[in-house]
Length: 337
Image (tube, rainbow, N blue to C red; front, side):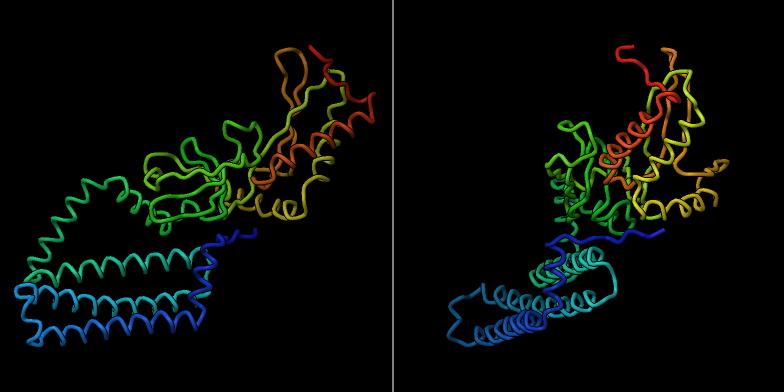
């Protein structure tokens, strides 16, 4: 079965493209080098006697300038690492996530450097950082939980950009995964009764995945989902003919990619994903007696989750057209019965 690759958004593609641009790379690194040199130069300048008037602020300025120089050095290393990551042979969506992780680590290091230089020793810096972290932990519980949720998403991979998912009451196709939130392009929802996009975007905090079940309709191992369509016919219909006709009409409406995935799906099911469950043919038809004394024909087939509405509509029209050609073999339930 073809494994679905992680698609990247235009923003992600633009970010990766910039990292491949040698001119942008040289410009950024050049700017950081100049910034570091300026910080070091100013440090030596303020040591001259003409700056004695700043008094007690002399050490503070020196510490800030040294911290700035070290921060520019960290940015140079970070830019180099991001460039190397962007050259890896991975999906652009995954590369974007790795670049974002690198940037986050860079920002944390820069903050720690400034805290360290502003304190007399490492112990004081560690205590200060611990107190600040404790205060921020209470004040920013939801953003921090969302950041942890982002790490969980990119490491564990419950979904990725391009997947169709449901989280809690939110249904949609994932278009962007950021540090704090995930953006969905909604399908169905309270504006639609079908599986078509509603045109709305949904943003939810990443922390929500720890509080709700995550339904992924685009799982890599089984990227197709089962769907069903039901028809009602009378008892005097030729059920064998109906089954054959319905299956044939359905197969004609399924695209080639779906048909090619049928044997692979059957093999994966037989390998133990679902015990004691065997499907000999796709699509298949079930019959059951309805409470109002007619037969319900249940057609079950597999389909790409993003094409379920269009495929269902084509199958309904094709099946009805085929059965209407033989009124002697099948009769539909009369209107209002």
